[in-house]
Figure 1 (cartoon, rainbow, N blue to C red):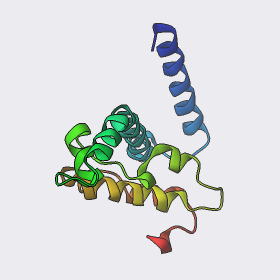
Figure 2 (cartoon, rainbow, N blue to C red):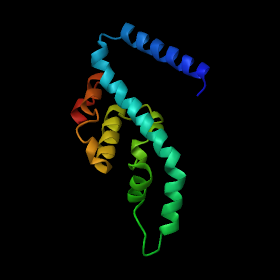
Figure 3 (cartoon, helix red, strand yellow):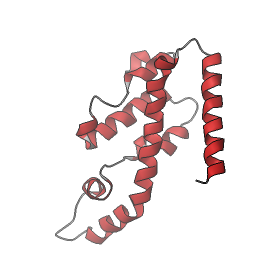
Length: 139
């Protein structure tokens, strides 16, 4: 990212924050954790994608051999964590309108925790339900 793109990103983020403050009754401390959770998902996805070719190549190389390993194990070795498809940023972004995005985000966070136990209890999961109607019964 060059300097101009960083300035544009900063401007866009401030504009989004201003819009969020103006169009909701929430204080910044009420929406900061869920927003940071989404940013974490995007960061994790970007990091995983950087290692994905290497992970898949190793998986294919070992498949059917005595040294065969599950893709999750290879991902943890190469990237530090495994990111299942339903925890990928694009999966969440591209969910159909009728899907419960709040529940999908919670599941994504739980899936990440399953393969990276150090994050258990750290990632925001319940915070998203206050932004949705009808999701609370599906927790």
